[in-house]
Amino acid sequence: MSPQPVILITGASAGIGAATARLFAQKGCRVVLAARRMARLQALAEDIRLQGGQALPVETDMSQLEDVQALARAALEQYGQVDVLFNNAGFGRLDWLENLDPLKDVQGQIQVNLTGMIWLTQALLPHMIARRSGHVINMASVAGMVATPTYTVYAATKFAVRGFSEALRREVGIHGIRVSGIYPGGVDTEFAEVAGIHRTTKIYTPRFMNLSAEQVAQAVWRLARRPRRMLVIPWTLRVAGWANLVMPGVLDWAIERLFVAPERRQKSAQ
Ligand SMILES: NC(=O)c1ccc[n+]([C@@H]2O[C@H](COP(=O)([O-])OP(=O)(O)OC[C@H]3O[C@@H](n4cnc5c(N)ncnc54)[C@H](OP(=O)(O)O)[C@@H]3O)[C@@H](O)[C@H]2O)c1
Image (cartoon, rainbow, N blue to C red):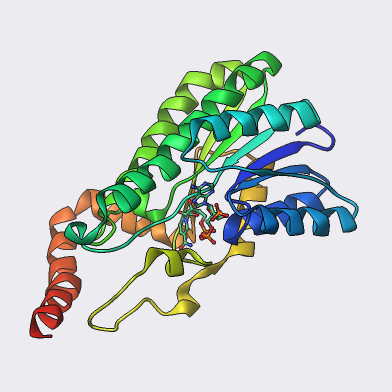
């Protein structure tokens, strides 16, 4: 990376994005912070400046093309370069497909998790190609390797992020641009709150099994220092991806019996 590299982070108002912004600023990077909640971005930018760093907050709704293009322009006007693009903004609405709102939940997830990511990458790519450098880090999820019930639309977006990242990597490598996908398991952020996860069995993944946003930020830092095609964290989750490929029938059977049947049974008993 160049001295005082610039990283543009979407979804920087909370969770993984905010933790990544703090870490990269501490490491001497200039950070462009994008999200809809401007008050949060401003507070984060102020904190970073108080620590001697540089930050540019840009109010952005990733589902709006004009906002996304204005974000790319603002970053380039302010700092003249973007070395790392961390396409992180995203959300899940995790429920049975028939319960999802067609616009807010279905179209909304596709627009933010996927379309916005593609638009922003398109907007910055000519700049990266001209400089013959740049690193695009796309936030996928373990749900982009193994799709489970109630994650239909979310998993669809994250599988698509994987396809987008892999094709793009092969397309732009020749210009000196690196592309990575990051696939975390559960992370303790506001994600679960937004997702509205509701289990009729009251059985949830214990929180102690989750990563912290700071752990993911550290992984993003390592990835920026040493680009890789794909980073699964924790690495043990690679087993899940492998099982999904090698014995999908066993997974179908186990998921149906251990998750879907008890959940549906409880619901119909209510
Ligand atoms: N938490 C997990 O278990 C987990 C696991 C694997 C992958 N991930 C992925 O990690 C990424 C970050 O999630 P998180 O866990 O940090 O969740 P989070 O704390 O809820 O943060 C989500 C971020 O995305 C932003 N965002 C949502 N909709 C947006 C929109 N329309 N325009 C612009 N920004 C928008 C939010 O900002 P505003 O609301 O201010 O706009 C917020 O900054 C997501 O892509 C998520 O899918 C999360």
